[in-house]
Image (cartoon, rainbow, N blue to C red):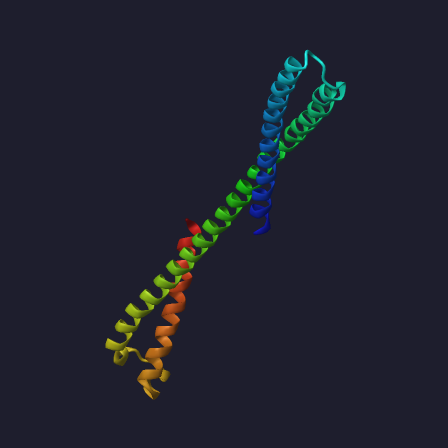
Length: 165
């Protein structure tokens, strides 16, 4: 996943290099033409034919080839950009789903532990009024057991509330 932005950067850099080379060749052709015209003026139009053919054939061929390469590669650069944007969008969606899941879990546990704490406070103040065999043996165990049961019930209630949303 980390390679894609680097490859996109390399791709863009290569495309920019091609555009720079195209500009350089165009500038060099212009300069060469000016110099050749000066030479022909000085020498009354006598210059080797190969110099003129160099401009007409070789330089134009290189210039056109680089422009063709640029034309082929430019859509790929846009495709890389769209691909990276798509990956970023997918990552953001997954992150928001993960955040929402964590938020629901925190809500469920908050409801469960909060309700369990309240129930525990109520149970401890009225433990002597509850007539169960467990309480007769040891009130601490009974209070702890009832608090755990209340916490589980409130967690289940919190789960139902958050799932309904």
